[in-house]
Length: 461
Ligand code: UD1
Ligand code: CA
Image (cartoon, rainbow, N blue to C red; front, side, top):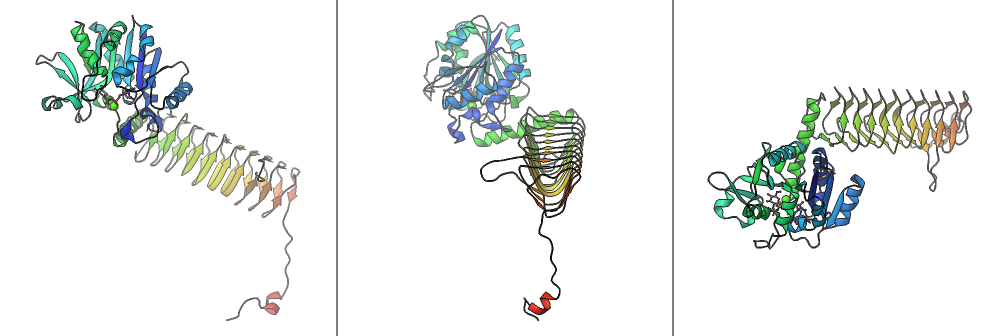
């Protein structure tokens, strides 16, 4: 069985954030979510996260993510070795197993790398296998020190390194496989004799070498996998890499992104073949986009299901379902569990909230459809408003199939418009309209002949 410990107790002082560092986001998801996903994808069944600074924030998040994840509290936070010491009980339950340890602030570590390192660990019967990579910038990392034959000696933290050691470009990823029993031995022997007076997990390597155990470093080809974020500039770098990785994966699977500028796609998003994603489009959460859609430019889509062949141009779509062949935009907002059924057309400056809009219905301009059940093939004239809120309560409008709503109509909810009813422009509808009726609810026009000539209401030139 494989087990994992994820270190997430640190404050992340350099982020200058109110939340714990592992909750800082990469493509709108906390860094730790990527680490948890990679660990699960690598087939690890039992996970323990070490929490510390603002632990309740991390615990609440993990509870929602997966309630099987265990946590152990580290207070105060005295270093990565000290963090693992808080998981003694967890480790004791896995003495015969292999335990993976990862930094919660390293979201680019992937399951493939973790699994290759595991294979290497097993093949060599190692007590400890660390993951390393040759990087361009070693600022703030642990340098992997080897003897002239390349045999591992120890990990030297940048802050403790001599000038010569600082030149070593092989970096410790902060990801390790341990034999359970050897991990327990190591953490029982870690001391805090270093520049920061911290208990370094990295000292486990030397401790197990002294114990005469096998050790190894799995040097990963993808040096980006080892990157972490300690400040917001590094966080932006991780966003850039993650964004590129996700966009590339979609392009390779047949999504057309002719220009990736401003295109940010969340890790859980699914996009169908031959869909086109245009600049400045953010798609996040549990969103699915069907084949042959054109999404963008300038769309923001969250937790929504978009059917096939949908066109969204400058739209904000939140928690909603957009069925096949719908055409929205520009400047459209659809939110709060709305459903736009097949072939609906929603044009410029229209908002739909908590409403179901039936097949083929059209609302081409300047309209608010809120808390409404709209039938199929309804035509909304320009400037229709469903008046769904009386200052205290929200109530619904029901509009039957084939109804025609004239321009500038107010529908005062609760109200029902029958099938194929016809509302004259400028009406304020307060009473239900039977099917196929014409409703006119506006003052009758009065023309007063010659009134202007007699009154001269304005100054003549
Ligand atoms: C650590 C490694 C370094 C490696 C680097 C890779 C040590 C001593 N150093 O350094 O060799 O190159 O990661 O990114 O391990 N944490 C706790 N409790 C603590 C301190 C930290 O839970 O008391 C957690 C943090 O929340 C973070 C992780 O451990 O998720 C790493 O801590 P951090 O302080 O960022 O370590 P680095 O200095 O980056
Ligand atoms: Ca770090």
